[in-house]
Amino acid sequence: MKHLPVISLARMKSGLFWRTFFLLSVLTTLSMAAWIGMISVVQREPQAQQISAQVISVVTITHAALTHSAPELRKELLFELVSNEGIRVLPLEPEDKVEPAPDNWLMPDIVAMVKDKLGEDTRFSARVNGVAGFWVSFKIDDDDYWLMLERERIRGLTGIQWLGWASLVSLLSLLGAALISNRINLPLARLTAAARAIAAGKPPEPLPETGPIEIIEANRSFNQMVDDLRQVESDRAVILAGISHDLRTPLARMQLEVEMAHLSDAAREGIQSDIAQMDAIIGQFLDYAKPTETASFASVDISALLADSAREAMRLPDVAVGTTIAADAHVMGNATDLKRVINNLIENARRYGKTEGGDLTEIDIGCHIKSVHGARRVYIDVQDHGPGVPDSQIEQLLKPFTRMDTARGQANGAGLGLAIVDRVLLRHGAELHLRNRDGGGLHIQIVMAAA
Image (tube, rainbow, N blue to C red; front, side, top):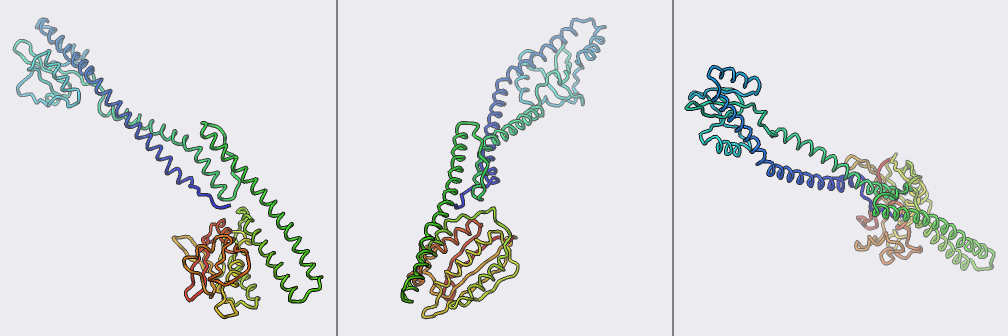
């Protein structure tokens, strides 16, 4: 099974989750801003009218009380206003230190309404002689007075209060957006994790078939796909076993009959060669179709494995092997499959790497460890000294049933050797690079993460 193009869970969260969260946050912020603007517009005039009416009422009542009270009782009346109502009345003196009226969004409307009722000469101040309050002037006969109201009696929501409420609403909105985004992306996170498990060769847990109809249908289809893949794997195992038995049994019987038949040595060797070639082709098909189980991966001493494969190749009469193998290079993988990969590469070099007019194939096997961006990587090199491959056709080498006979000489086989290598290495998370060797021949390099 090939790797599935799966987006990692972290990447998914940093993409769709935050995009959904951002859009919900923007929508909430704009809605809240529109709501605050609407409340401000709708509430401004009624609130200004209410405060203006209160100021006018207090000034009018105070003016009437002072005007109609006996002069000897005015002092007592002023004391009572201060102690019970929080209202202070002081004479307005020319030398009073007066600060401007409070600067807020309601003040212009309040000033206009109060002056409309009390007269255009009415003055307003936020602080008189260092005393803070809401100060309004009025006249009794020809005398001017200050009337001070406590700010709390006419104060609406301050900017800090608006900011506090807005911050609280924003925080709750963001928490709600995060919760909604998580709820929306949870099914996708489960689906991504299950797809990653399949890509890693592990059976995923069945996805819950609950929630919205779209999620139910997607999870049900995915679960059905997993069951179908499991059935395909089971059927393939049965088919592979059947191929091995049904094809190799007749070949073994033919081999026996050839041995017992009265044939010339040349005829017997030719038939035996054909039978061996058929058996090798069947072996290639089985190797290509056989899955690599990632659950069987363990630390493999690739240095020792390469040394063993090189020693076996040296026993062949038409092969000369040179080795440059670093010690103690370990990778994670299946030792049997990696041994098959190395043997396939050596066999490919033996078949196609003969120099023109020569009877000996020179093969160089190398292994070294290098750190790349802080990660240790193992580099495995297998090179021959043959004619090489045209650069435009190198990528074709990894395709099944492909043999570059025009460039590499005639050879027997189904053209699955490098395709098997590519398939096994793909499941090992390794990189396979093919290029022509300087000086002639093909250079095949495998790059794997060090264990």
